[in-house]
Length: 616
Image 1: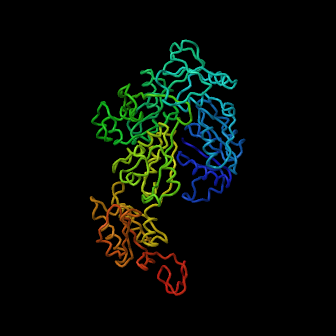
Image 2 (image 1 turned 90 degrees about the horizontal axis):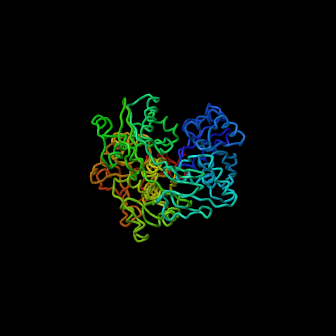
């Protein structure tokens, strides 16, 4: 979910930052009208000052379909959004939070927009109370509009919501006809809902199906089952793209409201015409890399020009199917006009009732070095509570014997993206999934990739559980090599060009940082540590104290302290973490330490000054 946060005071600014942290799995942007923000450095805080008035800011959020959180009085929120209200089925959800974070109040679009759900989630994380006022929630009754949102269904006739909800609130049961084989296995039906065969032989309260012909119902719910794939030349006029896509849907008799996503290649993620159409249609704009599109199976309409330009022979057909996540069929093949292309795919759909079956959750777990004793209690609990644990083969092996083998799923090296997508696919089935990473998932781990891929799965919750990274666990084995300012640099050039790694090594040496080196060598990169040492030796002396630890926290842990000159020629592997001291480092009793600068009588400070004079 895309969320905008606005505040008006310094206290509100601080709470905005806290809210953004609580909702870090969402795409959040915080602004403030407090003039104190003008004096802040750009990188000092998450919240930035906005020159827009609150109503102007609200208009922009409505235009882009962004949920809004007002930190302040409800009256400010109400006055700001009033001029832009259009329709309860398309209006963005709006919440108000008081500056002391005592109450979270959903003001608009509680069910269809997800405002109540967002309020409950935020209140739980802030330790606040969610003030929900919708009648069905207060009375613990089945809410048909919430059922529609949770299942990605569009509402065919809005007046039917009130008619159905009135029966529910009066304590009466409602009849519902759902297209055959569309109810998720194991989903319990609420007591207030009586299922009848589809198509029904009599009038029903709610009908759920792709087509309504011949059905008599108070409320019609239709699946959003189409993904629209598109491509265009760069800079194509937004108006022409909009007309082309609208005409495409009309020619193929696809209702615009039945489209659940617009999709294209990642090179088009900033194409104004495509983004503008997705915002107007209130659907997400999903983009995929050329590598991802090439993995989509099927027969497609090829173009040599497109292949030469973007690396894949077809964009629109492949991206439409990619948006269906392996569960769709191409129903409208590529059509091209004036530098624009479009295609459509239809995915299968199903519905469910219970909150348990509505969505799963993924914990991105840092498992530290891998041994159970060096894993945080929070990480252990996440693994124990998970229905499935996914990870790289080496990490999964470390967990064997502690968990049921049926609970574990491993993938090979360099299959990181596949590993992440497996997690989301399993979570969509309602499972609690744990993705394990060595060390900390946010330090050379998969946390950021999970959030990137998670944009296509907004209904799945993500949590990052911190782990002990190799810089910390390895430093503890060696002594205290990182006890002052330090930096961590990976020598792997799989995702970072070696030229950039060299630049960072030189900067670290010139800045007199203690350094932790990750991924110092592998079979393919056997000389990378030597190359790194040669770069550092251009600035640092050969006698600079160093050390390394192999198999940290595992069987066969081995530590070595040495000088930089000797480190260059020592054998290391991918399970080794290397430490290079700063100018205040020394080897004491076989341990590598970096002095902090405390003034101790009779000693020298970290700069080598006699007697500690001038120490920090």
